[in-house]
Length: 403
Image 1 (cartoon, rainbow, N blue to C red):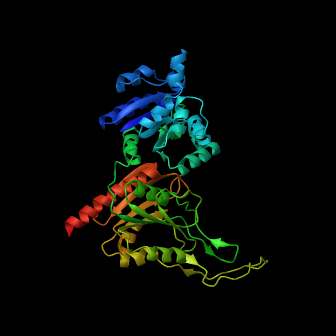
Image 2: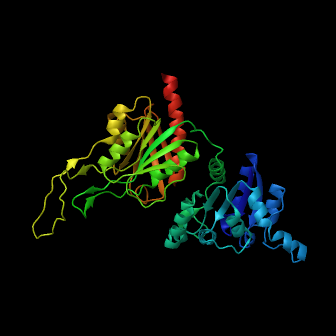
Image 3: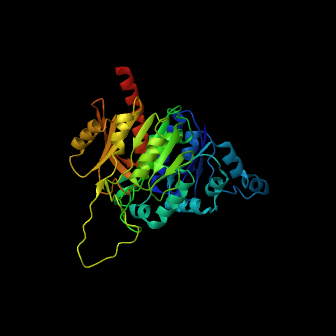
């Protein structure tokens, strides 16, 4: 592929040289564009030597009339000739400009002219990463279908420890291949994913729910679609943009989720039950709002349908993946659930410490029906989703070879 690599101004810019090498080792041609700030950290000559191509550093080039005329439209030609736009490091400033459509240099202008897959690898100070403005810009960029890779957590150049480190070059290079559709190993599969919480009403204005954001399920749906699968996403109430190329079925209650899952079960070949379904509901919901009084109130709750167990009994030769969010005894609970629900894999994680519910990151353990246990280290949920599918495919091969 022809890859347009934008380099933002941050200390992580030096890692872009390793990324160039990783992309070229995969056979890609790389055209580098550097912002003015990036040139303060790494000289353009470094990337010219690695790629064998001139490095674009300015929107208008030299000041001669002819150069100004040709270079002023060069961003259009470069955008049209490139198949993937990668920005690493993507600074908070660059992502803000992309999100708001500001075009004051070659890279931001080329971004607006580019119509293909975009891969952004953020790197910045932890406080900048968690700032509300950055989070809002990220939501905007994700809603456009851009792939966000990282950042990782660790020691930063500013002396802080936390999220903000640029993802490893090999990880970014692998993500580029996925974003470009080069990895289509789920073609022919129909993947059914459940995501988010359910809301079980107590009266017309109150309900029981949980802290699930749906981010893990949506990441799974996006990853499956990117890898060539037909994807059906049954989603509880969340505040996330619908993934591109995915059939989304919106539900509210556990009963509605059960009905939707059973309705779409027949064509499914892989089922991932990542939704956090409420365990109890009020069987007879009052038609009017229950008024507050000074008296203590008790309500009798009934169990909601066990969708995972029901699907486990009906799965046939489908591959079924369940999820377990625990606060203790993680492996024991995962193994119990694997057996009792007739699953082929359980994705288990401990909630808390900034992971799991409502977080963009997770750290999970895969417990497989083959007896294997695989720990996936802390990473963005998008990366976790891809690793889960890697093991889904390996598990399918193992189960088929054992039959």
